[in-house]
Amino acid sequence: MSISQSIFQRNDIRGIVGKNLYYEDIYCIGLCLPSLLKASVIVVGRDMRVSSEDMFTALTTGICATGCKVIDIGMQETPAFYYAVEHYAADGGVMITASHNPPEYNGLKIVKSGALPMDSENGLQELEKCCVEYRGDLDRNGPSENKKRVDAGSIEKKDPLNEYIRYLHSFMNSFGKKRIVIDCSHGMAGKVAKKIFNKTKVETILLHQYPDGTFPVHGPNPMKTKNLVILKKNVQKENADIGICFDGDADRVVFIDADGNSVSPDIITALVSGYLLRQCEQKKEQVLYDLRSSMCVPEFIEKSGGTPIMCPIGHSRIKKMMREKKALIGGELTGHYYFRDNNYCDSAWITIIYMLALIEEEDKPLRDLVSEVGGYYFSGEINYEVENKTGILTLLNEIYQDGNISTLDGLRIEYPDWWFIVRESTTEPFLRLVIEAKKSDELEKHKREIEMHISSTAGKGMVP
Image 1 (cartoon, rainbow, N blue to C red):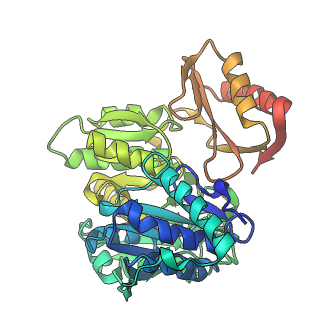
Image 2: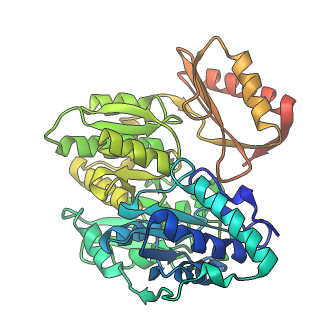
């Protein structure tokens, strides 16, 4: 059985275990990776998914067969994994996770030294070619002894959690009394949530804090409204200042205000940017916002003294652009937030720390802070399951060719009073639409038009 090339995506490796992702594939990746990374030491972490332990065994068996050493950091959240790669001065690392995907999925996030991401433009394609060759050899001959070295690598267990907590504390100022509800989504956030605020006046109410890869209560995607229902009820029930929901590997976060309303992540990008820009001595610091963000986001960044720069989607491309621009912060509509002071990596907890500091500094509830940023009618991201994604993009490009067209990532078309973007998901079989207008009736009108064009070409209907 040859390796399924569909598991190699733009930013990572991901698939359904036993359907297009097999442990033999992961073993071959382990065999190939050390030479590509020029590595003698690789950090390996994993999330709580049911298949993660077997994935770890397959991966590290391959890595150690080359003579490379593995630092096993156990079950950790992805930002703690990034920290560990840098902290232990490793030559690279692999995080076993499928992030927000359903429980049957798993995958690998691979980084080079310094936690620099490996993607399709800087190593994943070469890794894919190597794995296809090794998997073919494995299918023909079984495990090949000539792929192994005499000095087989070792596995050393280390737990960076305490050092990581201390590192997060370095971003904190003193907080006044706050009450927050945290939904860990049965993911990896529970390990940190128990400790991060225990020496502050912040009172935390934890929901679904114990890691469980079956996700028994709700799925690990905080961008889905149905996964926020319990959190919203508890925020109001507990009279909390804010609510917070994590994804499975705890690198994404969504905020809920005291009234139980979701706050769009692009607005959080604007608010955190404003807070950090006020702390900066240097003016016009660059801030990245993804091209799905509301028009009010770059306006607020500029008003706060920053220089807003539109960026493509995906952690590897954003991190690369962050380093090139030496940007202060970057944010995605999916709830990823990247910080220069965090080695340009994303961190949900640092975002939470800064948001609490902002609420403290302004002495205003989150809903009031949000109202100071907003001003347009925004659809959020709408998903469609379709067959002919390329055909739809071509059709929309033709229909709306009189607009200002950008193909930085997907198809974004702007008009004076409204804009939209349509792009293919890199992690799920969806076409994603975001649309914004200055008037609510215009938003609904253009939304109906675009949906009609999508469904007339290859629509199976909107996925809520």
